[in-house]
Amino acid sequence: MNSEDYLTNEKALKKAMRKYLKNKQPHCSEWTPFRAAEKQFKAKFPPPNLQTVLDLWKPSAKDTQRVTGNFNAIPTKTINVSMDRNAMAYIVPERPEQKELIRWSLCTQAREVNGTNLDIHYQVPEEGVWDYYARSYNSSHNDSFMVQPKRPGESDPLVYSPEGPRPLIENIPVNMENFQQIFTEPKSLPSPSMHLPPIHVSKLLTKLRWANIGYYYHWGSKSYDFTRPKSEYPEFLKSLCKDIVASIDWKGVWENANVPQEDWGDEGPDWKSWPETYEPDAGIVNFYQPGDTLCGHVDRSEVCATSPLVSISLGNSAIFLMGGLTRSVDPIPILLRSGDLIIMSGPSCRRAFHGVPKIFENTLPDPLRNDENDKSWKPFADYLRTTRININVRQVFPRGFNPLETAHAVSEVDR
Image (cartoon, rainbow, N blue to C red; front, side, top):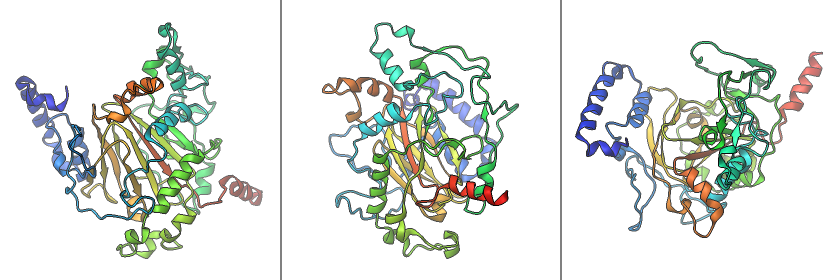
């Protein structure tokens, strides 16, 4: 039941109220502000108060969006964008179109060669889960498109089978001094489940959660696995993000910011050189389904710890929580729609807690729904009805740095 339905169903309202009051006490007094915000936006009841959510979208009279926040919820500062005088810094430029980014995310990036969450447990066809699904979508023999599970011994030879609850990983911040140690640490993959049955590709597609870009991100240790091959970085995405970063008036952002010099690292503030030195080499495409969340966390895996992280939202809308250096800081809730973009940069922002506690169903914008002029878009439109896609792009190492060459040189010295 959607949160809006409680307003017209008295029985459901009373039941939700009892559950809400039961869960609220006594735990809520122990919650940090970040945890309280996560709970607020995850809850089906009471419906979240979106007047506290920063919403940078300006509707027109023709718009019929059901979810709206508050443009004035949080004081904001306008940043000039040199690429388009009428655009604001958080809006994705019109190139490439959102449809192109969505097609790329599903058709090209969600493949085993790049690494996805499906690869460990399923024998995903080489063509990728999306292309296999698209063939089943248009087939008169749809029922035959099954995917077999993997069994122990069919996956990476370095496997482990954790027992008990999944351990909480608090990785240390990576820098040029300790990255060699992290480079050599073994990063095994979990063993395939022994109990998974065969699954139809349409059901498997709803289990897709992430796909790597560039360097392979190892979720078990929350660090990059540089022993695995780096997938080819898409030039269009690199070019897009470099243009975005180069278009921002970083002087207006950082010149008068009250950030201690030492927080930027040994070489001091580097924002003046970002238009020339920013070079993305890693990233992740996240795929969210209804009920999915991304718990509050801090990114600590990039040596370039202050460089911009570019995050592009596609599909259904979501609440994004931007917190502080600890969970004790009240997070700023921001409503993100399809096409919105966030850039996290600088020492305090890149080391801040952030997360996604809520995906809003039925918020797909009209241009991404069925297109009568493009029949090939229909399976994408059907999939996107319940989906949010996030493309986040990062810079792990300084431009021109090769971790493999550095590791080899250190190994030669050690011998």
